[in-house]
Amino acid sequence: MNFRQLKAFDTVMRLGSITGAAKALHVSQPSVTRLVHELETRLGFALFLRRGRGIAATVEARRFHQAVESAFLNIERLDDLAATIRKTAVGKVSVGVIPTFSFSLLPEVLGRLRQEKDDTHTIVYIHNTPAIVDAVRLQQFDIGIVSRSPPYLGVHSLYQTEVNYVALVPQNHSLAASKDRLDLREVAGREEFITFGNVYPLEMQGMDEDLAAQFQNKARYSVANVLAATALVRAVGVPALVDPFSARMSASAGGMVVRPIQQKLTYHIGIITRGIEVMNRETRQLADALISKFEADPLIVAAGQS
Image (cartoon, rainbow, N blue to C red; front, side, top):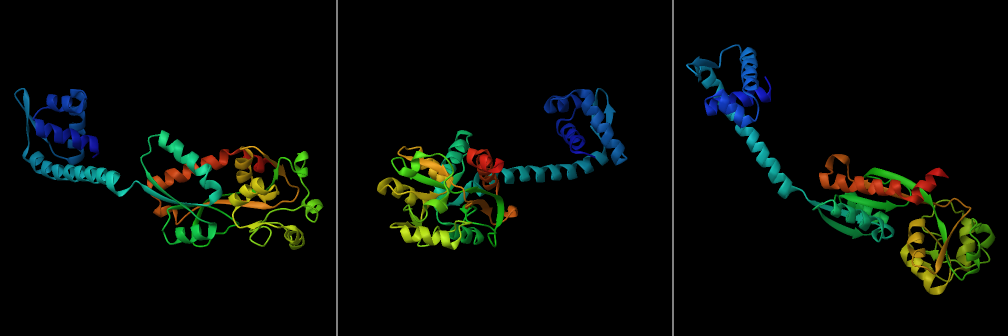
């Protein structure tokens, strides 16, 4: 037996006629008759007997209907429970994001979701990658947008990709004259660059110790935040090696140019969560939107083609 057969039987029992049941169910009378006959065949006993122009329920039908009513009552309770869950049990997502993407990618994604009438309450925390990984692991954040090289222990990676660092150069600097790839070995001992956290640069994959030492010996400014470095480039007129997303955002304001570099210095990007099984609907929706945004980004598309 199936739900449609049981629904037709229940409606006929409650309204007392095939005609009334057909109107209530918005189907034809023959359809209701067929569903009832199919149910009788499955059950092995008659449910209705003709009485004049109408029908009468059999004793077996009345006994069986008690069980059907109970089953439909439980289904209605499930509908009520689902409605309650939709209204009260979901609707919040906590996101940990590194500074690089807190000013561009994440706000853009949240803006698009809002246009789609998404009513999720999103809580945004800006931290560095280690703090975000720890918070996701401890279930303090539902999702994290991180950098630095994987693996991220104790969490599940929903998305990973990588791009190359670039040089962000003041527009009036001598290195801004060319658009060719910049060979860092040619400029390391000659030009001053902003460095990161007294090691050059912090978590920049691929730079050997000798090259890093040359940059560090020449440096007068060291910072531990990429966005702070881009602001410092503008303020003091000294180039820096930064991720291409921060460079793009800074260059769009004018006064600076972006030069690709010959050396492969890898900037990692990841989206993490505690586990797929603990993601609610809102978290999955945000994760899908973030991944789509990354996959369509021209910088990531270009990195995949190179």
